[in-house]
Amino acid sequence: MYVRSLRIENLRAFGKAKLDLLYPQRHLDKAFNDVRPWPPRLPNVNVILGANGAGKSTILDATALALLSPLIASSGYRPFALIRRSNRGEVKRATILADLVLQDQDGAIGPVPGKEVRAELETVIDRRGDVEFVRTTEQPGPIWERMYDDNSTAFFFVGYGATRRVEAVSASDLAVRRKSRLLKYERVASLFEDHFALVPLNAWLPEWRTQNPGGYRQVISLIDSLTPSTIRFSGEIEQGEYLFKHRNVSVPFSALSDGYRAYIGWVGDLLHHLCMGAPRGAKLVESRGVVMVDEIDLHIHPDWQRTIIPKLARKLKNLQFIFTTHSPLVVGTLERANILTVDHGRNGAPVISRPDEETFGLSADQVLRSKAFGLTSTRDPEFSENLNRLSQAAQRGSKGAALQFMREAAIGGAARVDAPNDGTPDPPDWMRQIASKV
Ligand SMILES: Nc1ncnc2c1ncn2[C@@H]1O[C@H](COP(=O)(O)OP(=O)(O)OP(=O)(O)O)[C@@H](O)[C@H]1O
Ligand SMILES: [Mg+2]
Image (cartoon, rainbow, N blue to C red; front, side, top):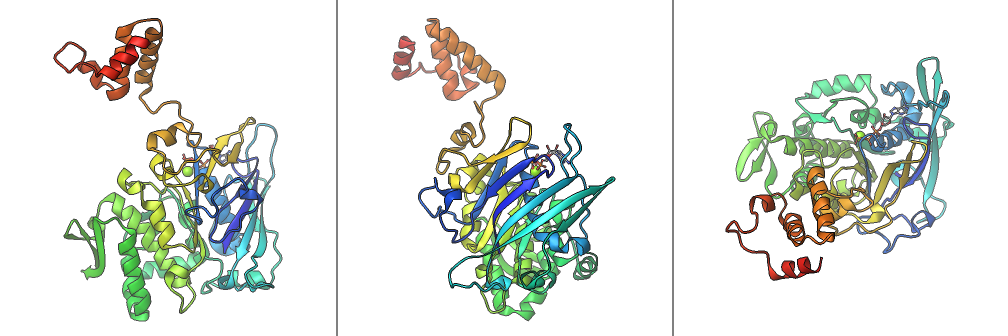
C-alpha cells in the first residue's frame, strides 16, 4: 500500500489542505505535471518542511489516523484535541480522506495487470461534549478484511514520532504490550505517545535467526549497509546485547552514542516490523508499505545528513517514505518533487505547497535562503544588521566601510579582530578594486 494523496479538513491547525505524495512507480499526472525529469531521482521520498508549529507532525498523524481508522476503536489510541479550535466559532468535525494505492501484498488484484488498484479511506472525527470520537465511514468489505488480521502482510505502515526512544524491552514486555494494543497501532504509537519505547534488536533478532536464517542474514546486511561507514554490524552478541564496531572497537548497543542509538533504534524497529509483516518467500527489501519518520535528522551529524535519505530510499526502494526535517543539508539531497512546505496562510491556517525552485545540489546556505526555508540571511541577526549599516555607509561613499563590509562578509567576526593595518595581510587586489567602485 502507498498513500497517493491526503485531504485534511479541520484537523488541529489545518483548515482545508491537500497533499499529493510520491511513491514507487507513480505515473506522471497532473499533481506533478510541472516536475521534470520524471521520475524523480528518489521516487519514493516525501519530505515535509515548515517552521515550528507549522503542522508537519500533524500531517504524519493524519496519515497514520487515516490508515488506522478502520481499527481505531480497538487499537489503544485515545483521540485528543484533534478537531480544529478556531476563534471563528466551534468546529465539530474533522475529516481526513486518504487516496490509497493497493498491491498484491494487500490482497488487491487489479482488473488489468499493471493498472493501479485504488481505494479511498475516509476518517471522521466528531466531538460530543468534551470527547472526540474517531471512526471510518468505510463499510466493511473484502478489501479491508485483511486490515483486521495482525499476521497479514496487508496495509503495512510504520511511523516514528520525534520523541521515539529505544530501551530495554524484553520479549515478555512485548507480549504484554501486544495484548493492550493492536499491532498496527503499535507500529505508529510513537507518533501519538511521548517517549514510546521501540523494539530493540535483542528482543526479537536472536529468535528470528532460528526461525528464518535467510531473513536474519538480510537484516544483518541491511543494518550494516544503512549505518555510516564508521559503524559496522555483524550480528555478534555479548551477554544478550548486540555489538557494534565503532572505529574498530566493539561496543554493546546500549553503550553507543545517542545519535547512533536513535538511528539504529528506529531502523531496527522498522526491520522488526518488516520481518513480521513481509510476504513469505519475498526478500525484505521487496516489501511495500509506508514509513513515516518525524525529524529524520534528529541527533545526526551534518556529514551523515548529506547521505541519510538517499541511502534509506535506495536500499528500501519499495517503501514509500514520508519524513519531516529542519535540516537544509537533508533538503540539498532532494529534488523539489520530494518536498512539501507548510506555511501560514492568510487566515492563519497552514497552506501546503511545493517549492517552485530546484533544491537538489544547493549548499545548506542556499537552501536556507531559498523558498524552502525562506530565511533572508543565515548570519547572526546583529552581525547582519551591522553588515547592512556598513553597506549603506559604503553606498554613501565610505571606502573604509566598503572594505570592512567585504572583510566581514568574507570571514565574519574575525574581520573585527584582524582590523586593517594591524599587521594582518592587506585585502586582495580584487577587493580593493570593488571597494574603489562602491
Ligand atoms: N485542536 C487544535 N486546533 C487548532 N490548532 C491546533 C490544535 N492542536 C494543535 N494545534 C496547533 O497546530 C500546530 C501543531 O503543529 P505540529 O505539531 O504539526 O507542528 P510541527 O510543524 O510538527 O512543528 P515542530 O517543528 O515544532 O515539531 C501547533 O501550532 C499547535 O498550536
Ligand atoms: Mg513536529
